[in-house]
Amino acid sequence: MKTRFSKLFIAILVASFSDAGAQNNPAAPDFDQTNSDQKAIAVADQAMNAMGGRKNWDDTRYVTWNFFGVRKHVWDKWTGDVRIENVRDDQVILMNINTNKGRIFKFGAEQTNADSLTKYLKIGKGAWINDSYWLVMPFKLKDSGVTLKHLGDSKTKDGKEADLLQLTFKNVGNTPDNKYNVWVDKQSHLVWQWAYYPKYEAEKPGFVLPWTNYQQCGNILLSGERGDRDLTDIKVLKKLPGAVFTSFEKVSY
Image (tube, rainbow, N blue to C red; front, side):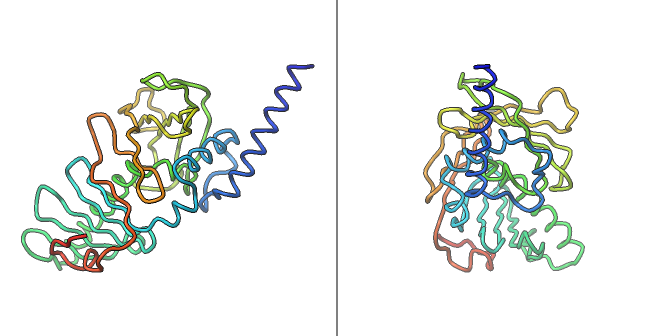
């Protein structure tokens, strides 16, 4: 009887925390609430709070980072405007990731051919989807199309006790067949490790990498440490010159 009561009490606590967390961190439209389990949702809400909270995330406007030393991003979260500079050549993409419209500088000149614009804007959107997920995934655990499962207690490679979450996707992104496992540290409630599976059915991950070295950026925490694949120059800014999103020339900010 005591064991049954304890289990019931724990279940009530988890449900109560999930309800409170959901109010502070509402799911995006089309998040798969029905097939996601309550414990996973509660852990996702804890992670959001640990990263700075939903309000601070929503209030964050400009985010910049360097992806693996290959691409530099400047992102206006409020408008969807992005600037993507390819570090290894002269390519600059100025576009809006909500409208998919924009301009391309490549081969020493602005590209105005319709087919070229379509091609390189698609490449730019794909790069932004991939590169931003490597930076802000913990804020997107209850994103549109996500199904969230709690796989139990686990340990990270560096020995931290963690809640293990599984993310699968429905009709979103460029690669909806992907699957991710995410380890959320039980003490800090921060995402501390992730694993990528190219297909839902895959038995072995494509990689298992840390998610560490959190830094205060504005009013939120962001992490750039991914083992041998680091994100650098991570900043949150309140203001930027408008030319960042309109001029192919280098702009100081």
